[in-house]
Amino acid sequence: MASALINVPKRARRGDVIEIRALTSHVMEPGYRRTASGEMIPRDIITSFSCRYNGREIFRADLFPAISANPYLSFFTTATESGTFAFEWIGDNGFSQVASAAITVE
Amino acid sequence: MLNSAIRNLVGEAPLRTGKVKLDIPPLVENGNTVPMTVSVTSPMTADDYVKSIHVFNEKNPQPNIGNFHLGPTAGRAQVATRIRLADSQKVVAIAQMSDGSFWSASADVVVTLAACTEEL
Image (tube, helix red, strand yellow):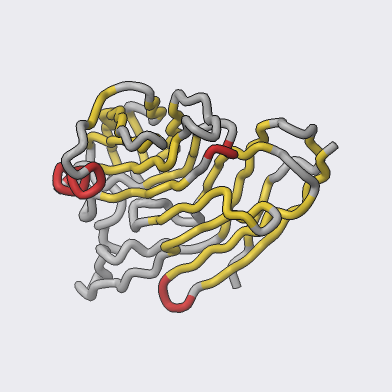
């Protein structure tokens, strides 16, 4: 099964702008390639990514076949309170994955 | 294809150049994984922020690359990812601001090994 790699600072000061990086393993088969025998390889991609900070959505991405395999995303948020970032990836063929990371805000 | 995809997003609104910075290497060997960063100049306050960033391409089988939705709490309007380019082509990044205006930047990329459509 796929696995996710999350990079969030463990501690931050209130009001700091922090970078969040998320990577998950996925083939991101674009659906435009053919095998040597000419058969089309069906699309199999992650179509949606979201990040919630203590339940509130702070970032969402719609992904297309032009996103590389093992999709990597980096984005920013303002550290406001201690708590949890919840990440979710959704894709073709019922793909679904979640991950989370904790932060302490002082 | 690129133009109609952009029209679908902005509608009749004017698309202005500026505020958006698209960082992408001008020459890439492998189109399968091209690092790309889009940053937008914005104060990111409750009444003046970047709502979303959209990235398009000219010559892949599909014009969309990604849509990224952010809000005023992002603090910094910047996203980075890795993309596929099937050919040497233009990449366009568009930001939608909280006031509804659209800003864009584009970059030309030369690709020596194409992605997306190769035979296995």
